[in-house]
Length: 432
Image 1 (cartoon, rainbow, N blue to C red):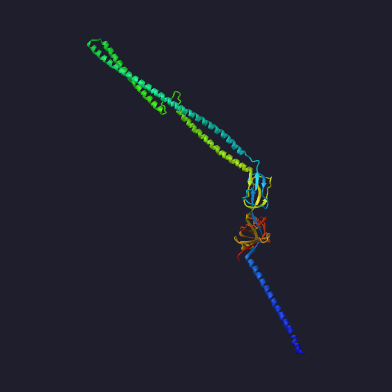
Image 2 (cartoon, rainbow, N blue to C red; image 1 turned 180 degrees about the horizontal axis):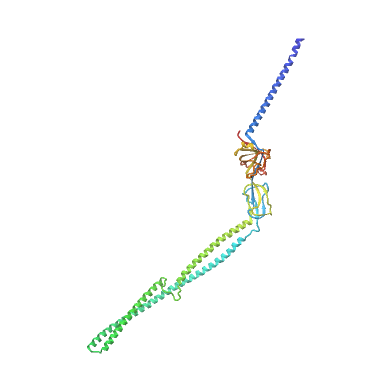
């Protein structure tokens, strides 16, 4: 019985021990796996803590472009709604302004000035035409006078030459008489000495000789005077043929001088006419430009300056807008950034140029990338330029603003204003 008892009781504790051993090994493996998992999680957490910095808050921002009225007027058309994407290259204008009360005072003044100048130009042209008519008449008078002077001087030369011939004939006759008187005086003088004739006849012959001698001298002077007159008249004839004059007319009027005066006056008048024409042409160009400007200011078309989303509409059709009044606002999706708020201690790891990963809360799976451009600290603690120091509460958060410029991204979404205003979780990629 004792032997049987030993053989029946030994297998039971061996099986129990093996079962306990197996359970202990499994438990150890589970504990080891759990420990390894905890260590791995702790290591991953520590690695991520050392290589990344997360934001406390972040919001995407963008540039808002104000579209203002270039001129005053009533808004007639506005082809833009909030959230609409518009392009500047579209032929249809963004808005149309009409100004029915546009002042045209300056234009009217210039037009009146033009009318006065046109009248002055017409008067100057009429005077120029009159002077040119007088010039034509003076040229005719000058030609006629030259012909008449040539004829007259030729006649005078012929008459003077005839007088010169007569004077020479008289001189020859006087010389002949002088020779005869000289012969008679010699004969009567000898006869008187001989007593053949009375002395009175010899004296009469002497007197006749003296008279004939005086007559020769007088006729010689007449010949010389006639010759001088012929030479003078020949000079007048040559001057007349050249269009000159050596004597004044009885009225002291010379067509040639008048002709020169008229030419000078015509030149001056032509200069006046040309000057008026240039002034009028310049003012006409200004009037045309002013009319174009008036037309442009009367109907003003406003185009979109950039391709953007309509962020806000301030005006409505029918409203009167002054120059510079805002019509609407456009959101420039090409210039976006995100303002990230982090603890000030994190700035030890963040520097300009650090890459950032942006995960939007409002868009599932949408990830943006950007680069840190500038950092600003002391939010709520610093008043630049203020000498008065305000105590800051002890538990006031120490936050810093980090601006991240977004990389170029054409996926702006549809109807969500390029994600502007979205909050996000920002993770900065830093080196451990």
